[in-house]
Image 1: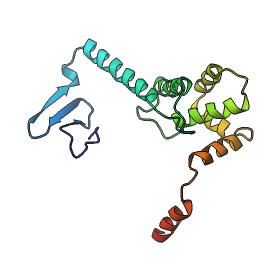
Image 2 (image 1 turned 90 degrees about the vertical axis):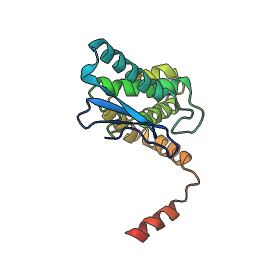
Image 3 (image 1 turned 135 degrees about the vertical axis):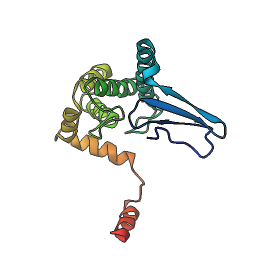
Image 4 (image 1 turned 90 degrees about the horizontal axis):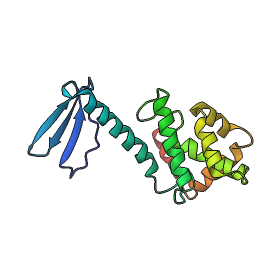
Length: 174
């Protein structure tokens, strides 16, 4: 099971075996090294787990732009994305998401609620939104109070995309 997206000029690639018990680091034209989880101490496995979780949550905050408005991501947006990942992991969700919403829904709902309740502090809105389940966030986005705002923000995001051309391409293969 390949866990990296190697570029054509990559020198190092990694892969994890199907049993998820070892990781292999391949160095182009040189050799490889394999780390087997069973050979690691409990402390090292714990440290590796914490490092991975820290990196995963920090990566969520690495967004340079709000995925909805394309404006520079604010600290509030970054915190919302981080809380989304932490909540998903703590509630038994998948490492790479489940397709049932995600940081995009969280940020979209935060932006909608900012418009709907402009007098409310951003941190309060983020705290409320990130305390919701993915299904609750999705339901809010479909609610008649929020759906028009979400639709407008989404339309602003894709303004200029030639959907007629896209449909034409699909029609030609259907």
